[in-house]
Image (cartoon, rainbow, N blue to C red; front, side, top):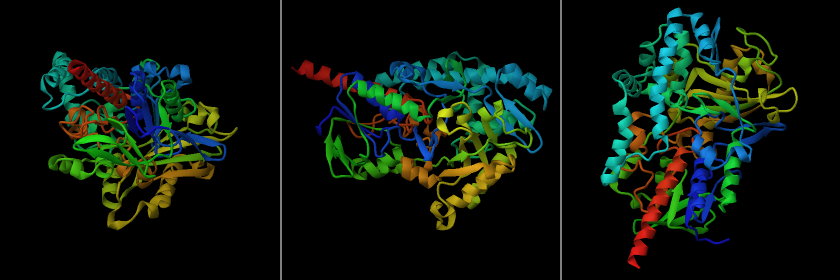
Length: 538
């Protein structure tokens, strides 16, 4: 195997594979370097107990861009999504709410709590959809780069033009979403706390913040701009787990000649005279290429893989302040039976078992979870989303058994008083199981085995600094052209030949494929300019 390539990709996550695919399709010799023994990064399916398999980290699909799916021919390679009958089920102490299944059905649910909110819902949904379309339109576009000349000015005008064409009402909604807390934003639409809770949960997914934290309304929007099988805003299950996506992407890469190396952790980016030359693996082996694309987060890339001496003082200062830590604690459990909820009894499979089951009973509950985490390191009453994919995909568990993904908030990236997550992980896992059991009394005894990922585990296993599932906070100061740092929002690092293609770039976190797509197109553009210059010189 040669040690020289046209491009090297650091990290075999879904964005790294997407980037590698487009580069190889353009005729480049590409090698992907993945530190784990399985391709996919955090988008993987693994057996965590004999006979029980589940999506280990990322666990549901919606944000993957249709263009990426089509270009990589993922459907032809076995990728299939099962849509949720209803999107979410919210058990409250003495009642429940189901969200999704069509506008009329959602209105019927809301009407149980507020006729006014039921009547308002279509207007709210339409307003949010108009703003969400803005995100869809720019997701596969490179943000304008400050100081980037005429091309960046044109890009800014092009991406800003749809905003200028919006009605005043929609522009107001857009301003609210980018500046307000989720609580303030939802208070402007609805009156009932049950109804507001059904939407507010999205504002704290992967967001170490409360629903009253300014700017949290944007994260609410980030989770609704996706689509499943052409249905806007829908969520679904990838048959075979999320790893099926990565495997299909790897097959697309291999078809175009990409070399994928597992158990090949990168120790350092090699830089000479301000230009990336290659990488050094932890094994000591050195590989060379004029193009290096990093699918790791900015915090990992610039704090660990690049020497600070190769970066200017201002960039070093800003990347030191780059905010990470999504407040996420992730578990997978093997179950002997389905949860039997007090407010909606039954252990036989029902539609609510196939939905996202969300324990977040009230805005105050969600705010208190964040307050607890700030004070003591974790929530006394955590926010938990339960997804039981085996209810729609029997390939994941043996007959009669089930697997469940537990996505939990709020948990501080670092614990106070020098305490380690290694010391607290089992205690917190018990707390999460008990929280669910408060709503489904049979749950604790149904747990056969569990796989625990504290924030520290997420960092160690997947390279997610601070356990941040989005590769960095999704606040207004770390979005679009300012992700990760203003002046480098165009996927180009401050080192020539080094690019960023992961979720720490626009449009941010989630299984989208967009950063990999966009970075590849900028790399191809730069390479084309170089080739044209060389041709003219001859």
